Amino acid sequence: NGDSELWVDDFHDRLHVFVGSKSLGLQYRNENRRAFKIPASTASSDDAIELTLFVEHMGRINFDPEGMRDTRVGVLSGSPRLNGAALNAEWTARCHDFADVDFDALTWEDRDKSNAG
Image (cartoon, rainbow, N blue to C red; front, side, top):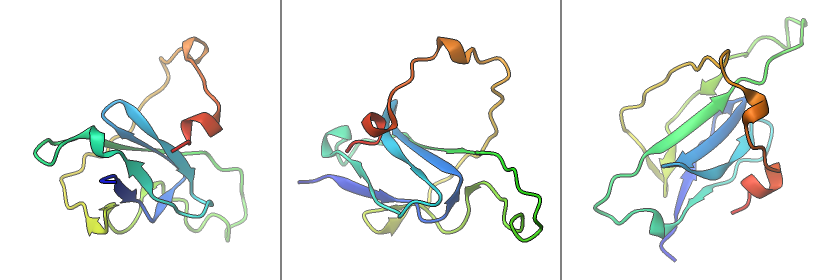
């Protein structure tokens, strides 16, 4: 069918995947990993696409030293893979400040709808 599969194996905490401005879905760190499907109609073989991996820090309430050993957030090891091949692109990582975001003005949708695909 020509669709591509994107795999991101090791991330913390919640991963949102976008191609351009289209959401491909999300996964939590404790869910079984599955591929994100990138429709063939997204780009021809000659076109570059913008892939955004937005990793959300979910916070912690855990004061047990054992539970706090690995509190890193982001894509942790390896490289995202497209159809099995590592994406050895230049990645930009940055933090976002949401202090000025009016969350009441945002439109929210069910997780089931945004994760379909």
